[in-house]
Image (cartoon, rainbow, N blue to C red; front, side, top):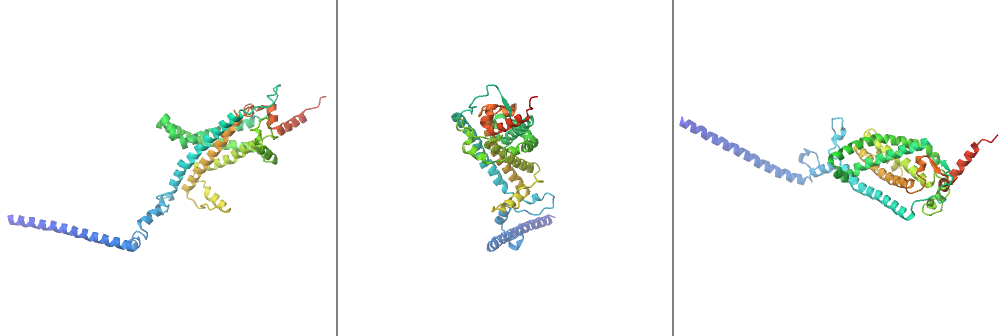
Length: 369
């Protein structure tokens, strides 16, 4: 019995050794195969031997993935076939870098220029003083004032909520805390989307009401040549209902506002509106070399960048407009508050328009019986 147990134990040792020898041989063979495969891999210029994984090396494969190559997927979301969207790095870098930096410089720059202008020029007064009899003339009626305030207040709300998205986390988050900042940003973004439609309505109404008064003419060149008299006391170039400066503001708001609105709609419904490929294809007819084929995600990224750039431009313009219409010029704010402006103010800044209004009023007077 003891001999039998000793025999079984000996056989188990032999079997165990055989297993170790077998695995050792496999490891040696695998190592030899790996060396051979690596040599063959190097000899084939980096291609995978036998094309088991394709004909490109790992480095080539990852470069292609990082470059945005897209494979085929069976699910409805075809974007899932793209592992890496490298344009996102460039988009984020530009948005958080040059866009945020130069946008801040532009806003700070216009405020600084207006302060310097106020210190040097002072408030633009009515040279002849307010009319001693208190006579006024209607500058804007109730509908026009309502449209102005609808457009202006909605734009100010959109500007603050948009600036919070771009800059808020840098200073507001530390001031009020992450939770309060998150709530303000979340509801601000929702409000931004809804209030934008009020801004669009205001733009349409503004265009319909004032388009005919803002058509450029040669008289505007004379106004621009002397800076509208803003830099010289006592100089008041003739002007119609809107001078050249106001026409520039009008068309900046109309064109910039509709451009903002269009890019904003493309962001609210990102896969319903894809404007950039067609725009680039059109511009290429004039010598540009822009990508005429863009993915859905690239369309969204371009819309965000354009929306942000145009917002900065319009904010700078509106800051200057608010200054001139309030503290910068005596008698200007009444045009959009009560609608009635001092007759002397109107004669100095819109002399041709005053003459037209007086002729209309005199023509409407009934002869005495």
